[in-house]
Image 1: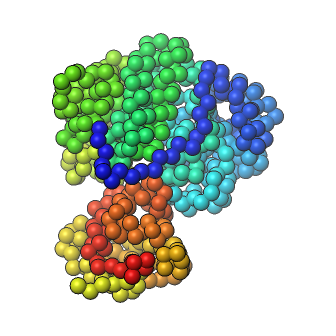
Image 2: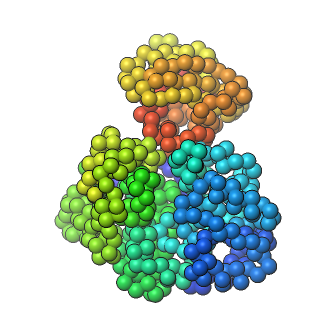
Image 3: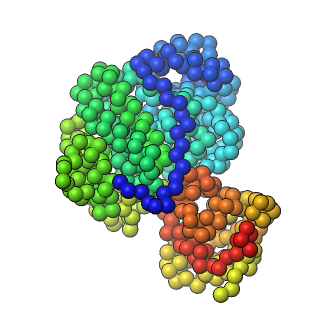
Length: 388
Length: 141
């Protein structure tokens, strides 16, 4: 994978990562102390509470936990953030601890901005508007896929506009991510597979992005190695904490990779079909990834050849083109092996949905980083039809 | 060929003329509605003693206001872009991709990112046309 002669980039990875079985309850108080914080509001959702994942965490915090806010839906919104921030403000929080998946983590990220800067979230719609570090935020992810524990972007739904808004702020990266494999042990096989494919997709898209760079490539490549080996094990045996841990680490590495190098067409399409037909993000990514790779091959042979290498399917003497096609086949095979849906129609998607989603994809921020320039919605529709 | 000092009204007029004279721009920008302000942060060491504010307004392939302005008017634009002089100079010379600069925090954008992305060809064309203006930069003149 050669780089441009005038390669220039900024790599940011400011989040401290703590990994280990039991780390979520054992390390949290010490991390709060090192951040000089004493009043934590825990941000989570009802599913996490019902699954009993919060008990040890809040018990470990003792009196330092001044409140738990759990009214967070699957897709967060500005109204959700406003209510949650008001709750945390009333409790006098000096740190947020998010325990959950992407929606919970993004809610807490946006809360940090409101608790530090005041005002309304609408005032911060844009890119890199903040000028100082925000309220400390410790993330304890309960899925292994989004990478949100180490990224500084958040996506929230704005009801007044009827669309999701993107808030990208490097000053708002979580201070600490605690990766405890125990917290993902109860994820059912389909959720394990789809969140894992979300991470896989982050790695592939970062490696082939217009903004690709060597540090992100290194992280993305190792994420692919780990996911290829350990994701099928996690799906087959969710209680295998060693494998769960490797997949968690892969998701975090892929998070750093795409947080810096960005994602591309797969995410643009997944965001859009998610908005139009409510296809879960990880599932949409897993279905669309190999189809988008096929589309991108003319502009991404050497990048996908590297994907083939990481997946262990590159053979001696293969050209980059041959290796790239081997990578596409290997991704299809991986998704079948882990029982991941193969077609969007399995998720209730119909022709009318993909027509709308193809148009919407053209205005998604991810599309401008895609390896191959996308000329119009008709090209996107063609890929959607392949995946339907 | 005439030369223009960057961040002067004459320079802005020359840039506007390039845009209005481009048939390709008219086609690409037919869906764009709204104003963009550009804030160039002061950098006395580079002969930019005070912050410069510019207000540019585009409407379905036409160009309306294209003027130097004050801080208050700059804040009224649909999109507010800001950054240090050195970064803007890199963008104006096509040494730095504007999208990359935003993502990397080298420039700031306040406004609806999805709208910008949907119209990224318009943004790129406006920057391309700026590079056709023979510019004398403050630290080069």
